[in-house]
Length: 114
Image 1 (cartoon, rainbow, N blue to C red):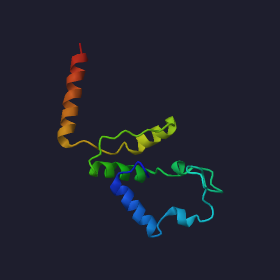
Image 2 (spheres, one colour):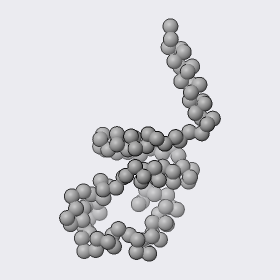
Image 3 (cartoon, helix red, strand yellow):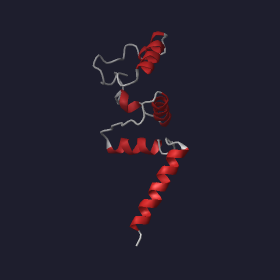
Image 4 (cartoon, rainbow, N blue to C red):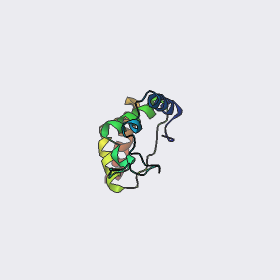
């Protein structure tokens, strides 16, 4: 939550105050240690989250807030590959940027050809 932009944190705080927090639905099972799974849970919260829609929503939010480009780290090679595959369908370039990339690629390949 601390890594989210201020506007996103405000929305999350408002949602939590209204009772929409996941924490309320697991009353009595929360761990007092941040990042530690709740009683009965085998996965930490970061492992439970991260669906394709979550990543696409985050990417769109960052784009809307003018926070792109962004670098996201994953310390798991498998998780990194999963995230990359989930975001493969996103096109983050404008039409002009796509044309520039295509022109650059064509020129670069032409230089390599004998």
